[in-house]
Amino acid sequence: MKLKVCGMKYQDNIEAVANLQPDYLGFIFHEKSPRDFDNIIPKISKFIERVGVFVDEKIEFISQKMEKHKLSAIQLHGHESPEVCSLLISTGIKVIKVFSIKHEFDFSVLEPYEEVCDYFLFDTKGKLPGGNGYTFDWNVLKEYPSTKPFFLSGGIGLDQIDKLKKFQKNDASKYCYAIDVNSKFEIEPGVKNIEELKDFINKL
Image (cartoon, rainbow, N blue to C red; front, top):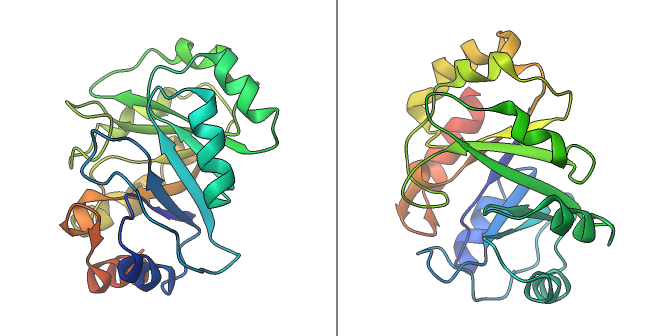
């Protein structure tokens, strides 16, 4: 299973996390977020994919960040339409479309997005578009009707290791492609605890 570390912000910390060799690093381009990225991504391994996270942004803004930061994927965390996803995926970039879950979810909303994104990402529904720090009921994913690979996100930390291992043996994880972590590993918004991340990777 792949690992994405999201909410990267500061160069030294980005380099330290990159040394742990996650599969993806996420950079949030959303002014209302305390993890809003307004920096230069340092030189990191070409094997780590750079993911730009956006919330209901204009195509022009997304394209500008794609070009500037050499993004290999974009994560759409708002109410972006299938048409917007289609326009973006036509540029050749990978598209991850986010859907928020709490106790239940209407999976029929995924259908219009099936052909216009590469991955789904399931996060916890909360006050913010992401980084709320708590998990949703993963059992909901037993009803997942698609074969599209998805990212599992939302409040995942060291205290979820046993739960994650149990989830991996469950039918609900059949199409789980990656784990997405963020706030549970932070010393402060945008600063990841390297030792805790290292411990998580080793235990997982």
